[in-house]
Image (cartoon, rainbow, N blue to C red; front, side, top):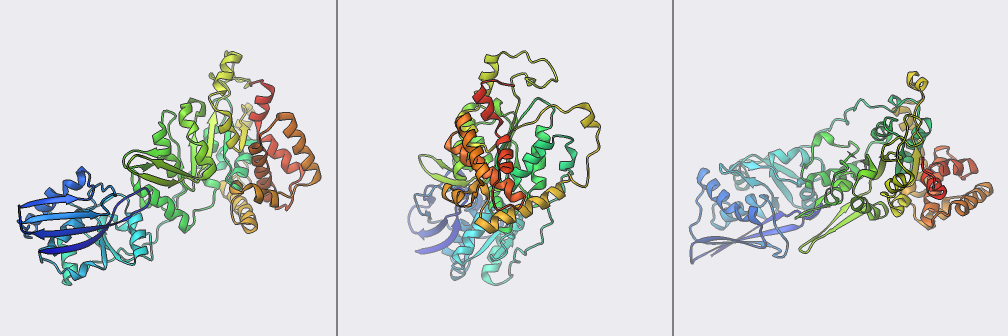
Length: 508
């Protein structure tokens, strides 16, 4: 009897738990059995491995063959276990040396010819192998992604024969060398493309400073979508750790990770017909949704009022916690979701209420019903509500001031303000807790009196109070001011137009 042990890794959320592939050859009824909660794709590896052995002139043992994927209660899916199972069979049948397997981990799908095919979610596997102190062998198509973790020892292979030759010491595999990734390509978009809308552009800059969520409200064609698409152009480049986190999430998603997107700020803009599963994640096994794919980036929800209300309510918890837990009967997955929300909507069903662009034929009841699609608790969690009015014709004819309005100039100011707040508190303003906010708010007397009057007049919630303070703190940081004065607070209050609308019960 022979027993071989090979190490591999499964996929669970954005983690890659260790899977020990135990292969046992014994006398008895001839058969090939895979146990350990394998799904159909894993069970089908029996036929792929048998054909790969025949086409590479290895001997497939005609004995009682049992493969156990431990731990037994962890679901196993995909073709990633083809290579470790094949190596386990070869080691158990003495066709490759057994002792060489202990220092490696293996993932890869086998073609019938013995060639290796790529798998999804290789980046979490690399991080897991690095933590375990073992080398990793991956298909050559996954090499570019695996090389992102520069401290890991990862080898690349094209064929099963190459892996076996390496384990025998006959021909060593080449490592996945770290290549210098090109900087994110320019998208051609610039904040200077947006003409007029001085207040909206200022609000976008303030939102970028403190990573605040923002809702643009205005008639069609006033530049709401254009403004939202320019937000990534004024944000600082992702750091190494942030880029790895976003790449790991994309790696386990259905579309996979594209190395050309390395360090590019995620910008996700799902259609308003998207389901709650598409937005927050789910499925079997659970996959990340749009809010997780926008981690450390921007989630843009255009036509916010056209989204299903149940879908929008799913955003409430992630906006507060920065993560989402997908629970199913058989498993549970935690996905990070620290995204910056930007939303846009019209003031009424026809879009022209109060715009002066066209006559609005919506009744008061229709407008109230339309605005009520966005629940109060969700609105309360959006830091800034900004009106984007109709532009006069002369504003469209003006030439933008290229020295003051470019994304590069604004980004430099955003970076400076972020450094100011990061040096003071070690986090962005939107992530401040209530005790931290009380400690660093530093309001002047006039600002305190103004905020007190506004709280009474508009009957604002405690959450709205703290979010106004956070926005005011970002405005003060942009001005490099240690205290919040009445000017900073007044500007922050101007970015809460929905509070005024709801109080006055008078839509556009």
